[in-house]
Length: 232
Length: 260
Image 1 (cartoon, chains in turn yellow, brown):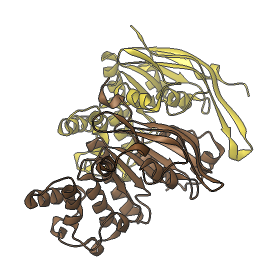
Image 2 (cartoon, rainbow over the protein chains, first blue to last red):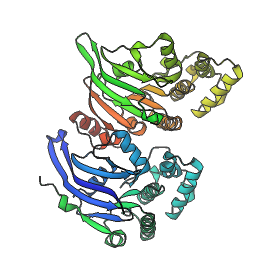
Image 3 (cartoon, each protein chain N blue to C red):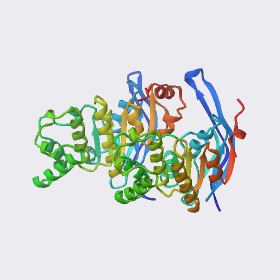
Image 4 (spheres, each protein chain N blue to C red):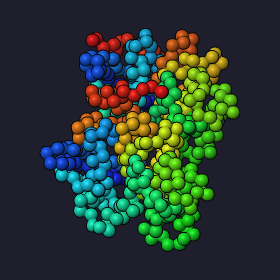
C-alpha cells in the first residue's frame, strides 16, 4: 500500500505580534505516515497541537519547516511548499476535512452545503443532491430541515451536517476533528460505521477522537502528539 | 497544457507615484482563469490605485500588466490598440463599481442597461436582446416585470444586482469589483455575496475584488493579498491568511473583526 500522507519534520510556530511578539511553538519534529485503508488517531491532551496538525495537513496552517507529502492524482505534492492553486486542487480532489465546527455560507440550504464538494468536482447538481440526501438521512437529519441553512440548527445537528459534507465525496484522504464530540450514542454509531466503510474503500484517515470506546474501534494506530511538543 | 494552466493576467513590479508619494510599489502576482483574488487593506493602502492600473484605467509609473487575449496571446496593456482596449472594456472584462450609479445609466430602463452591452458587441435583433436581458434579470433575482423601469426606481441592492447583470451579459472572462457590497445593508450584502459566489463558480469567472471587508474576502475569494502603505505585505490562500495571519498588520485586521 502506498503512503497517502508522509509528514517529515514538520513544525508550526505562531508569532503573536499584537501580544508583544510572543512566540508559541506549537509542534516540531512531526513525523508520521498514513497509508491507504487505515485510520490514524492523534492522541494527547488539549492544547498539544492535534488540531493544528490536521490544519497543517489540510494546508490551512502554513508550516514553518518540514514536508507534508500528499499523494495527489498519482503524484506526490508537498503541501508545505505548494502554490495556492495546487492546495485548492488537492482539497477539491484528494483531501476531505471534517472541521470541529461547521462554517457554512449564509443562505445556502443544508442539502447544498452537503452536496457542494461533489458539485465542485463536476457531479451534476441533482445527482449530488441525491447523494447528499442519502447521507443526511443516515445521519438522522430530518428531510424537512434540508431546505434550511444549517446556521439555526443545534450543535449536534450542525456537526452531522458537517460530517455528511466531509463523507459525501470519495476523497482518498479524510481528516476528522472530533467528529463524534457532540453526538448521541446512536449517531456516534453511524459515524463509526461510515469510517469503517471508508476504510474498506481504501481511504486514509487522520482523526482526533476523545471518546476512548470510539477511538478503540476506529484506530488502526495511535500517534502520540506529545512527542512533537516543542520545547519553548 | 490545459488552457486554465496558463495565466490570464500577470502583474510585474507594478508601481504608481503621485509626485513623491508612492501609491503602489513593487506589486507582482499572477491570476489564473477562474480564480478569485481579493485585495484587502484599509483606505489609503493603495488598493483602488492598484485596481485601476490592473484594469487599464491608469498607467503605471513602473512595471507592467499583461493579459491573455482570447486568441491566447499575452499582451502588455500599455501597448494595446484602441480596438483591443474597446473589446476588453465592452466584452471580455466587467467592472463592478461600489456605487451602481457609476456603472449604470440611471435614467434608461433596466432592460436597456443590460442590452446596451450586447448592442456594443454587434447584437441588433431587438427580441433576442430583450430575451437575453430578461433572462439575466432572472439570474440576478430581479423580477422581470421591472424590466422597463429605470434603475433610479430600484433599491440599492437591486441596483447592484443589475450592475452585475449588465457586466456579465457579454460573458467576460475577468471581472473587477471595487467594494461591491459597500454601502449595502448586511442582509442585502449576504444575498449579493451568495449570488456573486454562485455566478463566479457557474461561469468559471476570474475576478479581482477590492474590499476592506474580510468577510467578503472569505466568502468570495480563493486567494488574498493584504496591502498596507502601497505594498503587498502578505499573500496566500484566503483561509491561510485569515486563519493563520503572519504579519502584524494582518493579525490586527483579523483580530479587529467582531464575532457575529
